[in-house]
Image (cartoon, rainbow, N blue to C red; front, side, top):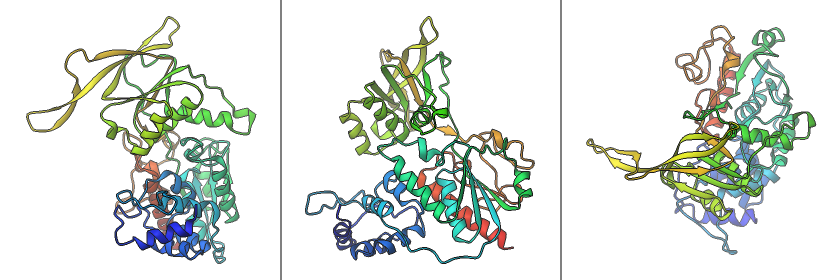
Length: 423
């Protein structure tokens, strides 16, 4: 990709570009001007001011100028996301000026929220340690996305960059069990940020849900990642049959489906509504279909039928349709006629969303959360919990947040911690 040429094309058409602005607040056209001039280092520095993970967002965030397509001389669609990805992969910003060593801050979780907060806290001069429960850093970045969307080598470069910034990454540390908040205070940490939002899946609440062979998509992706990890101790096998059905929505569902079809499985995806309810863009749907994934719309799973061994054998489904109620509202209802049918399968992967896993936080005195596990904050604060010195960000505050919202939340948390420690 000739990033300079593509940047110039976007700049020439800046007045006609349509679409939502960057949710991270990045001055896209200022970055493009640096790229067009061949000053990739300055472009990277400008990106890092609002987004410490351009190599990630350049792969996972939606295109900004989605409403207006511009093509270069090779008839290729010019993409801001591709330029951002190029900068994240190949450019290096000038090293930030040295800041005096200040108080120590602990960050729990090394996913996108934890890495973002750690970066901006370090840039403020704090001594930052990131504690990760898994044996590898990255949190959900390491397992929740297919390797063809977010390759492992991209994450490894990010970890090296953060370590070079002076951030300490420690794995195999389970906060709330192997490491307690009181121990961190005793070790001289002045603030604690909870950035461990990746949680557990919403289960399949239906008859037969206890059948073997029903797997949450997060569990499938996590075990698939661990099976490919370097340490033999964590290579836990996960058996998946030849015929797989996935139901729900979101990028994780289609990532899992595309991994499975590449492993030679017969894959069907069920969407409770039209393709617009799939939770992904049109390109993802097209690519999934081109790879041989069967997509059935207006279908929802109703129950699971087990065989004599207790394994799932059939998935009872119901065809759906829209109906306008007396108040004029559009509701999803069972289709008229014989709407029930069965799918024979070996494995059923559920993709119904997730809730934050906060069980290990319940023992912290004074920490408050609602019935769904979302942490409560002090009035007027964006991230400080009811416990003095403990902050939170990311999915612990908004379980359904996308990656851009998570990065924003972590950036706000780092700023608020900075103000807290200046007092």
